[in-house]
Image (cartoon, rainbow, N blue to C red; front, side):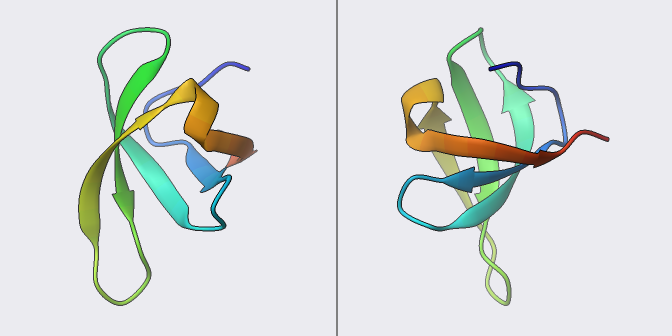
Length: 54
């Protein structure tokens, strides 16, 4: 799976987020949430699918 900056992703726990930082091929920072945004660290294993590439 290829992850790019600002991709919208769905995590395996159902949360939706936007990739805001790429540290390496498997580690990222993402803004998660709809009304209340939260910056979290995610790995490639946390991501179920990429919804759209910008």
